[in-house]
Image (spheres, one colour):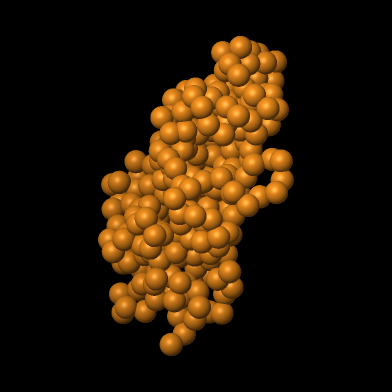
Length: 290
């Protein structure tokens, strides 16, 4: 995503959670920027178990969830098995050493342990919740995470950065794919852009639709000529069953150097890991006010 540890954009990034150029564009249009720092949907639900191998048949054979990935973390010392529930990642957590998780298991037994919310910048949210920065750790998929220590509920709440590491379930691959698609689009790299679409993909826009790579490539070729530069601000994402929504604000620059803002939501469906259908709900480009 091109963001540093403090949540600030790296200079060469054109796809960001909050790039300065798009932030300025949003402000100039009077759009509410309070979305920065909010929780951005559920990343996963975690179930604490004493033995994953013994618990797994219930989730796979009885509930019908698909096994996606299995990993072992060093700190905290746990085994994490990821299950795809369609619109959310369900994790089975098995403690492998002393610590809070093992203490909870011994005290309360197996069961629902925590809900994890995705955030754009973990360090910013930890400051918002007055959490010590030393409480962050590397969670599943290599993403930075923390538990809220001041939460009085018996159900733990975890925060995890959406933008880093590997995503699991059908939402994770969709997010990874559309971010890579946007990065190629922002570079105006047509060849790279087309690698993200299936052979007979369809994109549906407010003013028409295009089917197949040839039509899609022709559309983007014209778009690149009309607006030689693009930056995209990924505002939020929303889970669905198979198809997922990604809200964005984009800054298009025409050949005269004038910026134009577009707000919208892309709904994408993957097939074999590639974008098979993309439905874009977006307003017409609006010139920036001085």
